[in-house]
Length: 287
Image 1 (tube, rainbow, N blue to C red):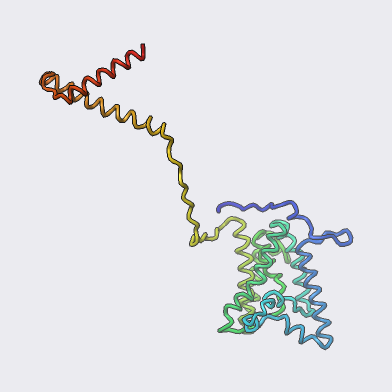
Image 2 (image 1 turned 90 degrees about the vertical axis):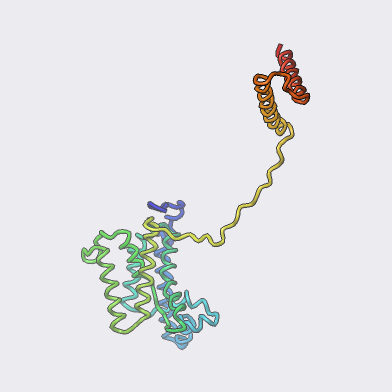
């Protein structure tokens, strides 16, 4: 599909999810509220005596996912300890996530966020038999910022640095951190989430299309057409018979011209007489 896809969507796509004390709460704000609540619960759990129990029940572990604990693919990001980086992530989601939501609409923004959020545990699940790596505490702020930089590459952001260069710098820093600390989880997380966000925006900008699989293409049903009415069949066959008769009469006339009427056989003379009577009858009918 070429060209820009339909960005507008329904009217409620650009409406707030809810209102709080007269202030609109959009999807980006709602995501931040969920993460802040998870940070508070995690902090209280760590302060109390059930911190380890809560953390072990939510973090992602491939072996436990194989045993049926599929919820860990989603809940791993709800384990967040209080930190300056966490606060910075929340600010990024509010600032840049709201702009992405305004451009894409609520539904597509949530689809983008969900895709960039779950792609990392899905990749780690696939690699689990060879690299069983746990995962916890992921906000998705960097992927949201990469989506913003893809939409608005020339907008100045941090210290007047263009968005595209700021995104490359942040991705580069996290990549160097992953290499320095020998953390394949961080490397996969950055590459998978940011790459998904970038491709998602490019797809809805119409820069590429997904291949269509037609392996199970349904065969069209055969329609049994009714027989033609007899009147039409007779009407169609009658001109054909008349054409054949005229050809025979022309051949008889050629024979008479070459050898005389005495050369006709009784059967040929009968055909000639029948044709003459038919012509006379048609002339009488016209009169």
